[in-house]
Length: 268
Image 1 (cartoon, rainbow, N blue to C red):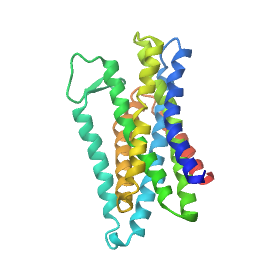
Image 2: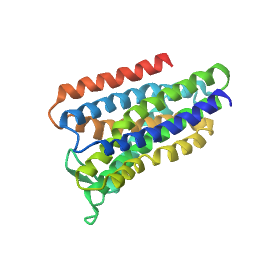
Image 3: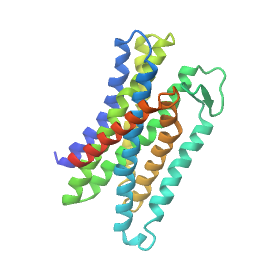
């Protein structure tokens, strides 16, 4: 099997498997995560997401836009407009789909009083997993449409992106299943909720894979995924990582997450 096809299969698989692994941790816990642990996990995830947005999505979007004659003189438009549209989509989803932010104790979207907070929290995580799956699919699709050395570089970058997202998906899966168990849900059911929150990632990864074959749209789509991921990071992950007042723990974990992604980008 050609290198880039193998990388595509691995990349799409590990982002879902990582969420499943994190959700499985519920079987080893007797109580909820401590505030310090939550803060470190969220800060680390924020660093991963921020670095992924720049290195794995914005930079390739700019490069692709510059390389296409159709955008000559207007190469800034696809990255700029795509980025803005990605953020706007997540904003409107936040306003429409009912969900619940546990740490902030805030309900968003069109409210359904008969829906439990656990279900709303599950939806919150699921919504914010969509751009992650889309980003991996687009990055892998870019590797498939490029040729020779450019294809190898793009495939390696896609794998780096997938590893970075997978790293933060492990604690994210745990962050769904463990609190649900702590609120009285059976461990098996909490595990399936945690795993289910990650199902959208491979689905949207495959969608991104097909969309990326429309070469002229590639910079738009990469920037779109970047805008959506940036919205998630700024709207939810960073604020929640600082909610418990452990700002230095959050900041330190953020730097570690960002550095991990820099290492992945330079070593792979």
